[in-house]
Length: 476
Ligand SMILES: Nc1ncnc2c1ncn2[C@@H]1O[C@H](COP(=O)(O)OP(=O)(O)O)[C@@H](O)[C@H]1O
Ligand SMILES: [Mg+2]
Image (cartoon, rainbow, N blue to C red; front, side, top):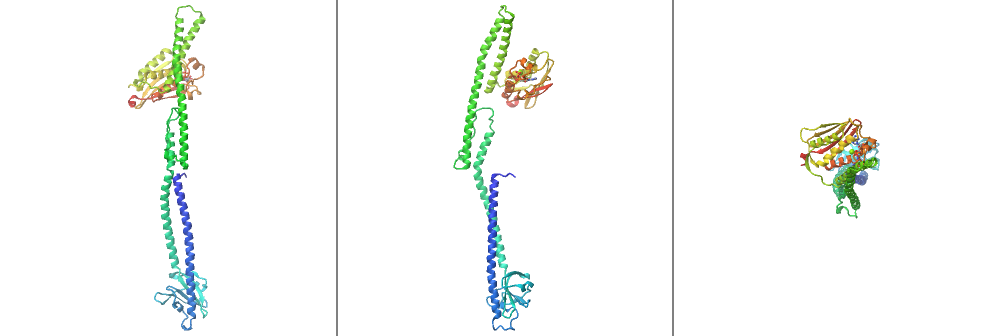
């Protein structure tokens, strides 16, 4: 069973106190019992002596007392029991009453065995008596006794008082312990809540973060918890620094990629332009030069696309704000599918659109690019004759654009990392298609920048990309 530290501390304190109290109470009770019985025994012994003295006194006469007249001897206490045992049989047994008379009672048979060492016997309805015997001058055994009731009553009262005091003490200690433990673990709660707050921060995205610290009150190094708090704060400081350094280097890298891409655009445009110019100059070129010029143009176009993609990714990474306009996705889909059809009329291009407008808030160009990338994949990574269906499904709070094809599907080794940068299938079709593996990375980044996401499921004959975006009404 798991219990909180607080409960465990309180319970163990209570258990300890209860145990100590029980030991003390038992010892006290036993000792008091011995002490009281000793006391009673000495009184019983004195009473027994008085009885023999009384029985031996001249003047009482042999005829005068063959009974319990020894009870009337001065000094005998009220309630004293006396019995005369003659040849092993009780001759008479009586109790001394408050008025100085004797009251006959029945004596238990065991009375005949009483010796000068006091023992306890129960006398019928009179309760327990402590009895001692002494020999009378006439040879009879005189048994004298005093009620043990006082001893028992005292012990009972003592046990009751002990129980009450123990219970009260336990209740008091429980209360005091609860308060003390609560105060003692408060600094631990502070540590835990700081750690919990930090654990809720999104640390994976690489941004520099300001981490919460344990408040100064919880970092007093004179206490153990304070030492943990101070160590935690130092650690948080280091973590924060590490995050700042990482963020700094990532920002620099992003900036570098963005700058490099940007700088590459102009020379690339020049290369493509000059190749075009040379091809159209009207000069007669040999077949090799013509081929080389065509390759230069196509590679320049490919590289331009790559550079544009890199630049866009770098900007999305840097959190560059996108346009925030109301965009109807239906016409975008119609345009993008139209373009795809123009490029690849060998595929079957189907569209399924809702009756109502599919409105989102965002950047129309980027969303168009997402559709273009998805449709380009459905075109380039599938053979002609493949059916590609693009549909929009509007729900109250979100809408889903699905691009589904019945082509061969995404290779199993690529599927888990298909949205990563430069991830692409290594089959000849993919390489021929010429993409660098940035298309789906852009789709995913643009979706995220629109507070949406993109999902994929793919088996041979059924590949579905689903772009889920929040609908316009909710974001306004
Ligand atoms: N509709 C699809 N059918 C089969 N494979 C696909 C499809 N879409 C994407 N892929 C696979 O995912 C990889 C990554 O796609 P993408 O990021 O667009 O890169 P690229 O198209 O430049 O290769 C592709 O190389 C391809 O192997
Ligand atoms: Mg692609």
